[in-house]
Image 1 (tube, one colour):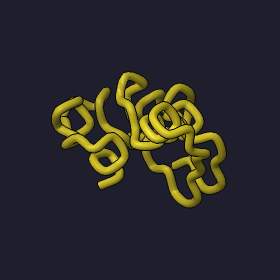
Image 2 (tube, rainbow, N blue to C red):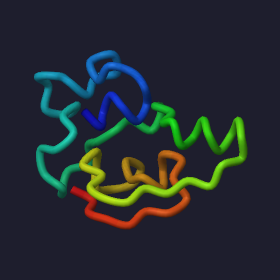
Image 3 (cartoon, rainbow, N blue to C red):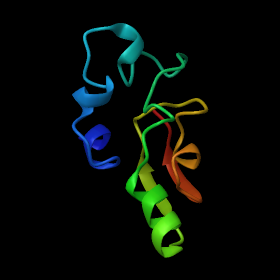
Image 4 (cartoon, rainbow, N blue to C red):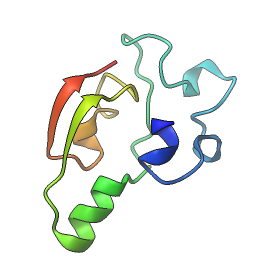
Length: 83
């Protein structure tokens, strides 16, 4: 899943795969839930280690409000749906 692929860790290790509603990725786009800000994505690592320019195109589906958006997780550009 995206929640495991982007940070390179199993989602259950940081609460994304949980029965607790406050840790679910998508209860509703109106809620402030999503990929925790403390999780570093591959985009964050690429920018820091190799000075890459990063972009994400498509469906994010890991939180629709700050601080859970792609721009908060190392991507410099984002085009797509925040679901």
